[in-house]
Image (cartoon, rainbow, N blue to C red; front, side, top):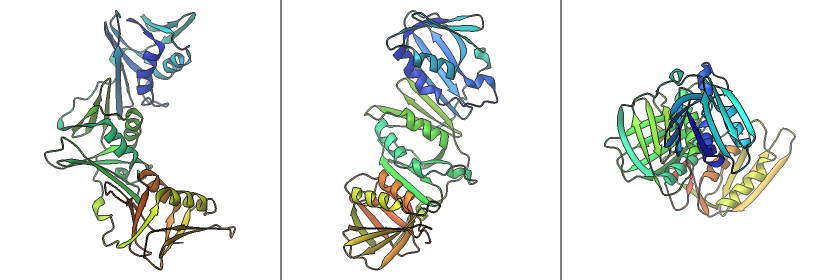
Length: 366
């Protein structure tokens, strides 16, 4: 096995796959990348048995072969080489040599046969959608995923696919983020899958936006995404996601319209003096204005008053300020619409002119 490639051309596929490799592995071969070379193509595969990423690029006049190379060391070497270097990689026995200019590095390898084989997928559904749409759906909801919750199905992102729309939903039990978009080819019947946290983060890192289409393949236990030179596969969480539609407040008839940036800045300032443990702020609504109050155990106080389009009077609700800020940051548009019912009910936040993205934040007793 032998090939030569410019540093930048080799670095791109390495960057796309190296994050999948876990630092601490039970199997030594999982710390390596599977390197498959044909005369005109290089393919790199990384897996942690949950998530798999395959990136490829074109070669010229390469000598075919397969081996596994330590992922982190190889990536660090290529990244540290000077721009524009020609990198030659050659296999001799159980050692691989990486050479560029006057630099030479010899790395140990493991046989390609030791690398876990890719599962064959039993396809249930296949959809195509613009990469920018999928990227935005994930970015505007993934922050609300739980972290290491005993309710394992909350440690991931729900993809809810119907005939003409795809929804992404995340919740940690204290807040919920929902974003939907119409897709050209939907599902024949409604499908729900839960992508685990690591898969979501890798997908977020991989997607670049843009108008090109990506293909999403749904199987019973896996999801696979195809994009130009990259194939991403992840196991799914085997569990039932809560009925999120029941969480969205009904009868929240008290409407408050606020400038998004003004509200965000006021909350950030008030958060400075909020209780470091509970992060609570009190939101008081009266006709034409919203008042945000924060206290901490040192008896310090922050008060922010901002103008709002509302006729609501005498409603005061406590919230975790971080949850409010996350929700507002995920919204677009100049104005935010807050829909409230009473001081013991969740608040619904969305863009003033669109219902595509909705965020539910539970109240906090202060």
